[in-house]
Image (cartoon, rainbow, N blue to C red; front, side):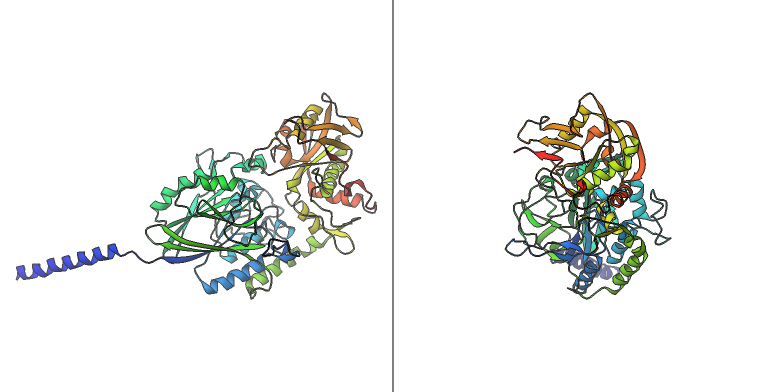
Length: 562
């Protein structure tokens, strides 16, 4: 009896072993997963101006596009096709936001992203605009904010982001560990998708130093590669990089296969582990669908004007990625049935914001006042803001005003009666910077002006905007350090040994935008005056002076040599 029982048991074990062996040699078939990516939304809850590109590469007529309702409607429609769609971001969801979001410490935008089912976002440089403490509050919730006049004002129980911010290359110098998670693994149709995020290494140059004290920003590619072994140990079948750094190309943003991409993201991609076949980028506000050495690199413009749809074929268990199909899709209201919940949410935010945003400020002589630079690097709106900073601090001895062009986010618009509202003014200067007055010698001011060309290769080109009465000439053909000449103040040549009182926003004053000479300024006073308040006061002070008012002109302060 015993022998009889053992024989079938041995046979059963053999049969089971053979069956298991058979299973082991039969890999599951490939799985198609869908991703949708955005970048650089910047709190643009409402549609904004966008210029589409025609199939032949020419520019079409500008339209209103983007906004959270169009994005929500598209995602709702696409999820009806694939309920497992994975929505991700490459950073700058908030920061430099229009007033409807920034009035409330960008909490409406975070809540809207929760409603959209966003799973992860690389941290962008603008997520650090209000400092590391505020970034952590936006992630985890609560009301302990450096912006108490804005935080928890629309809702008293702000609960934070339901998605995860990622930044593998941001290290807390006190612990030597990532400041926030480097990666997250999401399961889609049985496939484990590893999502790793980084922000541009040069973040320190575009964020106030005080807000990121104690943080180190490392090499983007090295941080991504460093995270891969742990993602593999946790079972990741495929790895996608979310990189808040980008490039530029003149190719059509809607056409896959671009090959002319240039900029920092190209070097990052070339250094990545071969396991990474897809890189979703941001920061440069460009639309592109490119190929770099066999990898797919995408970006979806900005402000929600485009979304990138991605289809990947993945072999579970072996980490093999087959076809990757990508398209950039224009987000235009009415293209998909509305998402009723999002429409109601936006209506609620608008109602809460209406009184503050609609408050009239002043009537301007001409509108819009443009931020676009002329060939010399001067813009009418830059002049206007530099003059406003100077006017607000003359009583503190200020003689020269400086403004960084990157801090000017939109043209100054006005209503049909040329009356500017608070909301329109705030869209121009959304950062909440304050004015800082300091002493610089004439020699230091010359060095400061030369620093417009002494910039890291990855840095965005920059031109300082200057106040009325201050003039200089530049010639890019001359050697570095000798490009600026004929510097005058109120018609008198600038003296190297003489001390001048200058004013700039606190971002510049801390060396932002790669202007370290500002850090050396003596007798510094942070006035606490928001530059937006100074701008509004100045618009009121020049009301009725007409288009001949110097602040509305461009071309007299900065001269480019022939």
